[in-house]
Length: 369
Image (cartoon, rainbow, N blue to C red):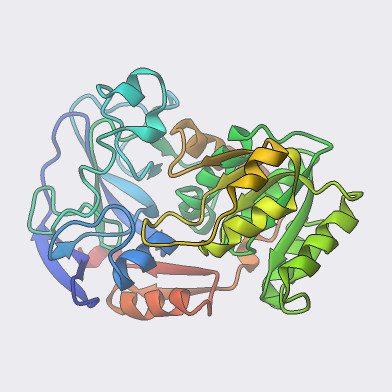
């Protein structure tokens, strides 16, 4: 039996290959990909190859997915939350591997595993071939955390749990945001919307900044308390005044950057109150540069941290959250489009041009595999 997988070439084009489905090693599994979202990092890899997990001439990409178990390796009987699994169950998996041997793993910081990406970005010509989720199948490696999807959670929401929801969930808890505080959210894309919902459930007041009016209105539906449109306030000084007016002149207790625009980081420092906490998530490419005034960090005694991944248990926490609140927040009302695997390049273009918040890739009828 064969499967199909997409790869990114160095020329920015998307290609496809077919391979026999691999036999799984002990501790691993093979899943049928039911749905895979196009993440911002996928777009960066496609356009510039500047994000993480980029290999050689042909790299398998895609990581935000939900799949159905087809083959279980020896010893795989439960997920990482201790729930029994079998062929036919739906699962999601962290997009990185935890080796358990590096210094980060040994101190419990699995999100910083030094061998996290030994599989992501592999060539489709190398075993196990299906190392990206823009494909009919995906190979979940040993030491790659995975969790069973609740029966009541639809594929469209389960796929988004990894990586965007888990990453923003971890980022907010990493900076210790608590009830009664004020959070600035820079960007009203999918991660910004998720941040609104999580913050609302924590009793946190949110201020969302974006330049797209439609996205800001969606943010309101996700619980945003205050909206600032950059088109209406094109100067940073005016936006800074607006944030201070909403916070009694102090600025916000915390902020999260999910724009992917490096210049947003400098602005975020301006909006924070003394002793504020700042988590940078969206800007993850080394080539992105911006002017930075370290004096804002020093004079305000700010805490600034970056979040590249998440602790794997946050993937399970995200599934629980989405299942519990799926009808409270309009997750299904995201601006979204579904593309056939063969039309992956069109989906990438739509996301790159900000024409859609969520682009979903499906590989078609399971019987075709």
